Image 1: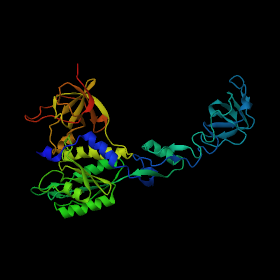
Image 2 (image 1 turned 90 degrees about the vertical axis):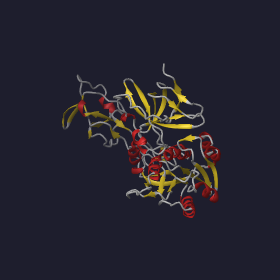
Image 3 (image 1 turned 45 degrees about the vertical axis):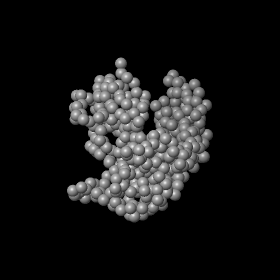
Image 4 (image 1 turned 90 degrees about the horizontal axis):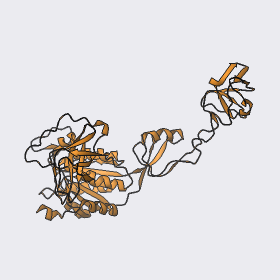
Length: 421
């Protein structure tokens, strides 16, 4: 009944629709270079200066006229006529074209000799060797790495234009209390928008978390209208199902249009995609694991389409320690614990449950089981996606404890799947 009412749409179809319906907002910010790591350049960055600004010494020694050292060797030291003492990085004086390293010089003040001939330009960094005024440093759409920061500052850049997107996050539900308060009977601490904001911030968005909105249609209508007005993307946590207090889809429809309500995805099936004033509005389920799946599979791909970089983990191949059963009509995402076992990795599916946040804490990967695959046998080698650094994966000390009876396994798996020998 729920599936029929929600008219579930395939996940790939929903993503394609979102890419076509919501072009990037073309918003940029100008920010200090020192804090730009992990952000994306909005325009090409060119050098305003030449580096080095003049010929400089590449070694400690003496700046010389190279032709005057011709024939010098250990058996035939040649007197340097007018040597100029330089250290690495010092400017080369006019008329000199090379540097004799201090290790190759003998004698004393007034009578320095070289035991090695040098050629023109030897041990010299010429003017503009590193970069010249107007040269490209970084192209548009470049993800700035920590190593880029030093180069930008060295080349005279202190601020840079970055791609930007403003994302608003609205938590809903009369049962919610803010973090820091002790929940009473039937209450719970609001955490979905904090977790989503951390993820979206990491992708380069600028997030605003709004106050909790109680289960009141008018209050929710006001909050959504404000969120759309102030942001490029609005994410609404909870209220996406078909319960008596789930108002999100109806109010999105009043203020704009509901494009999708219900996606063939587990967890995250009740997710909503709407459009208000041309802007995307995503309704995510209230259960934490389902909420994070919807953010990962809907909001982050949309940001990627806008030119941002998703903070997805790297892929890894691992063998399943247990069979996985999945609904062939859905994209299923199954949480895993991955560990090393000798020369390969093993992946243990965690119990399925959209509301159990400790499963996220215990997991370090997930498996995406695409539509059409109903089961994956124990021992199958699958491609999983890590949720943390590969270096944090530990050795398997023992086979994981059996899952309580009655649980079905499921997690996010990335094709291709391959049966082990």
